[in-house]
Length: 89
Image 1 (tube, rainbow, N blue to C red):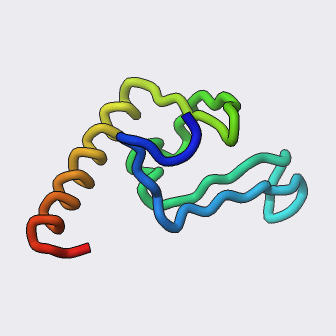
Image 2: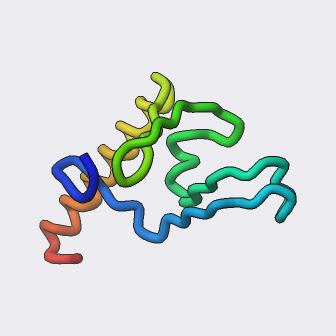
C-alpha cells in the first residue's frame, strides 16, 4: 500500500537523497535515507533488504531490527497517547 494508512507513522524531517558516485565520498551511486530514529531500528553497519514497490520502496527488517522497530513504535504510541490525554498536539 502506498501513502498514508492505518499503522503507518510519518518520520517528519526524514531526508532522502540520490548520492552520486564520486561526490561526498560516495564509491557508488546510491540512495541515502536519513533520520535519527532510523538508527534506533537499523544500526550503522547492519544490512537489510530493499525491494521496489509502486510509489517507492520497502525495507525489510531482520528479527533484531523488527524487535527494535516494535519497541520504538510502542514508545511513540505511548507518547502520542499521553499528549492526546493532555490535549497537546
